[in-house]
Image (tube, rainbow, N blue to C red; front, top):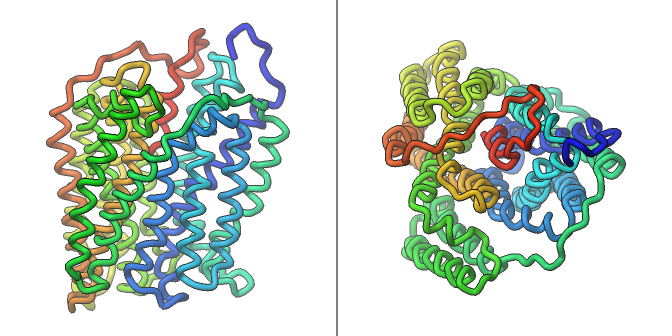
Length: 493
């Protein structure tokens, strides 16, 4: 839409449908973290199986995020959004009805695919719903919904499990998505305009296969190696992931030379600053999902907290992220590398302080002792994310901004999957080797503290970003506030 177009009736209702779907996707991640110990107990699952409950979703989401964005261009954004919500809702029902851990992991893969299908469309539909003067407010709502999902997810998950609705135990955390998904689909079909796609566009299916194979060759050994006793073929799999990754890069260059579709544009792979920034994003987010996985087990199984008590205990982190994100939005593009460094250092301090307040084996747990460390860590993440995305994307050519932003979010998810594998290996390896829960938690925290410290140091290898004039929401700007950059930065954490 342009400023001269007549605003669509019902556009804010359409926006509500998009937000409901996005909220459902985001809150599902935090809810599952709280439910991990209940799932492990219900299915008598092994440590590696419970890691796959988290990693399977993250990995499938990461792999399908980029092609799903392009597929929306092919079949139409509204159609792709609706299909994604339907897939996610059906997958949620399958998760809630799963008879075993294997079927749950498979349903989580399907959930990740559905989430990847709908996520790019929610942001891309905003320019079709709103004239430029209203887009700033619309994009700000995405950031607000992401913050609310982070804060309410752990508490809602703990409440649903603790309530044991109709004797269903953990299953309502997935089944609650069914009515939400129905509302989102109905709202989108009624109020979101139908936008035709371009069927001439194509997907890089070979690139998808190479990327997926390479990641599985790396992640499978990290998650399953300890359970299998580290046979030689496990190390061979990790070794083979290197040439497969190289093959992916060469394939992208070949596609570029032929003018064919690329999963990640070769121009981005040739951009050293972008590659460095992607590594930083991978490291930053490697320390988050794995932390909440092992911390939930530490609190509930190691110290006897209920799911609700566990969820409330982690809230300072979410509140810290929310508060820092609001402040970061006010700072705009000022001092980006300094803010990234400050955020990463706060994360290191938070995780180090958390190790210091862990109880001794058999000692009493003080939940209030976790407030300051978790709050500092949350402040750190909220401080670092937005300027990191700004800095990386500011050094990308305008023609690659959309693809670069989507790929950066994929690297974020890949980092999360790698972190789950590595932190799970450290935590469960020490725990099953005879160590106590505090020792296992300490070992896992060393990894994410080291990853955050690396971010604080390596960010200075990136050049100072080119600054562009800021357009603040709600000031009647007559031009489009660069939706791909603003929207991705606002909700990526």
